[in-house]
Image (cartoon, rainbow, N blue to C red; front, top):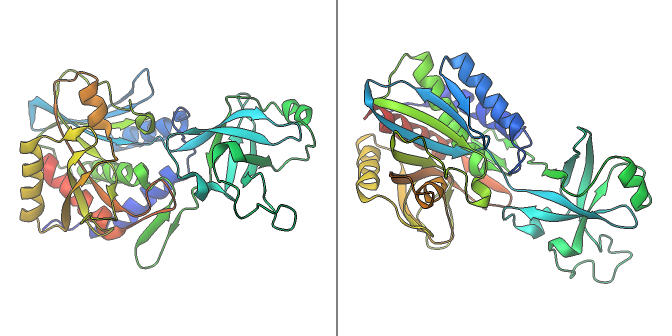
Length: 346
């Protein structure tokens, strides 16, 4: 059995640090810089691809083989589409958030000039004392807008602030860690998995442990729109994606398990890799679940569609209410971290 308890605080700190950084897909430079700084502190070589993905390389005992572990730090978000005559911001979606959950959420608008304005995402019928359809108006992008926390009364007032179409709107994640071990926040998909990867790097660095072969920790930045890890270094022979495990319906995964995905919308994962991960989980006494996610895609899906000659698998902590108000538990994160450690050392 692998005891990850000494790294509980480290893992939660890593998750909170990542969740504090606004990084909707396409607006991830700050998250990439944070990861590059952490790699430097840990003593591992790091580079950033032209697309903005971060590659942290951990030398292994056998340099003839290279495996890649992929998580993504891009999140769901919004982008300014237009400005209404009364100074509200209409928006388009980045990725696939559950839009009704956005009604009433706080947000930050980042302009091209570097200004940041706070605001609130609202239905266009936001008051029950004014609008007869306040409870029934559809909560969808065309029926909602952002109210800026700036005294503006018309479109021209907003334009003078430097706000324009194409500016990113970042949703407040509302991150909390409870005393009994729950992490609840937006964007645990996939900053929870990325925190597991970062903690893995810290364990290897602090304890002087070497993975069995050269290991690249790859933090992608366009996963939420389908092409995050489409590019792989040519020396990589297999890819393990660390993303969220789904909870609900007829699935066996819970917030306390590490999920091992056998198949998602892109098809089955590599038979031998999945079998190896199951054996490792059983040998280490981990709580795990094997499931099929028909409405899911991962960085492995993008890598295979990109023509990379790899085999791939997918694991991650069970996350409830994905793409909404998400939640997982220390046990799910811990089991994921332990399986990652077992994988790289096997």
